[in-house]
Image (tube, helix red, strand yellow):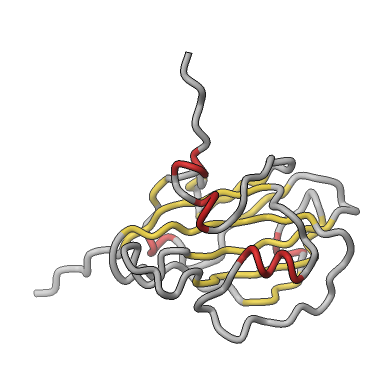
Length: 172
């Protein structure tokens, strides 16, 4: 009987972005009608607006959501790893990021070359964070160091999708 292999390990999300963790919260992510499941492909044109994210948990629990691209600018040479796309803190459990405080505004995926992984990582906060300093740059963000700096511990949920540059519309 073969053991199931975690898609976060196969996709190198665990290793490149986060350490091994045990999911304890359900997080559902949708771009329009498309449900994001680990490793699925989503066209960048579907990601111009922030995804709909639903987080389980109690309303007295608070969460931080981070979205990054560890493959910037290219999967073979990720010299800007990680490119941070979105940070929202103080999200009450049982709600969504619109109820939290946006630390870094959402920026949709725009992969220049190759297939990029876009990772949404959810952390449970020990207490309200309030004002969190915005990163000075979106390039070379480090999810682990960010979590350590805010004493967030290991993630409680993570999901990732793949995206690649869409062909330009043919002009006549």
